[in-house]
Length: 274
Image (cartoon, rainbow, N blue to C red; front, side, top):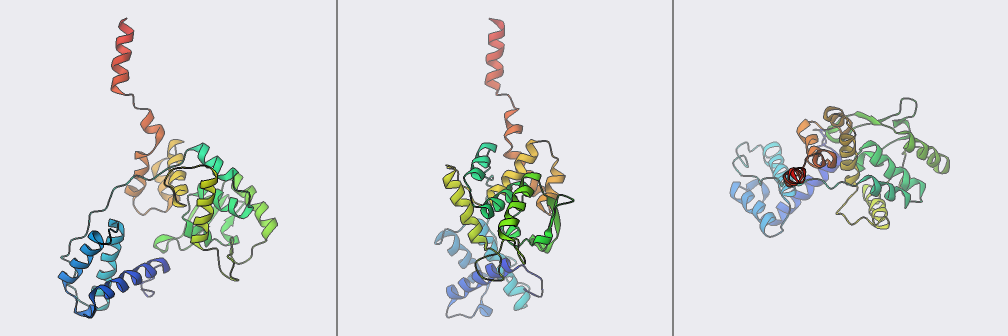
């Protein structure tokens, strides 16, 4: 997987999936597994473990890699059906909720992380792996290196977050990583950043089912509502397909609220005739 340049996150996930499969298959060796064994394991994950379709699909991909790439069994797993992915709409914060989220965060390091996430649309893994040299204050850009799919891209650096980062820089003077972790030489963990967000959401009184990734969804939706075209949003987010970005058209409040209810139209006509 390292030779294929898979990300550390993907490698970790695949190893976990394969380890679970090996445990399920005992005492049989995974090299001896057939399509029926794989099908039973996927059904076990769906029915017994009640895992999401996304997780089961990840297991499918991990086992496909194991059989086709490692064991060189080209026919194995190809005929095994994979679960249909759920089509859930992302949860999005409104402007007031974002403002409260930032206002309740007093720690300048934590505030910088949250402001960066909302103002740039970066993933949590991209933010914690930022280095000081990735911040281009003159061009007002952030250079994201080796993001999802091992691709580099640029995203925007707003004035407000730049001011916050300057305050943070004076207080912490980071060197190797923009947001260092507790262990020397290591960046802040994704789990720690997630805790920062959840604590701020709780203090801000946000009752929605949110995660750090909600800030990325909110960034994209608010850009769409302000008139930014989908192609530009796709590039800022680093989406390989425009279809991924199009999901935000389904959660845009501005787009939906512009549609007049047919009942209102009927009642208005009734009032006009009175």
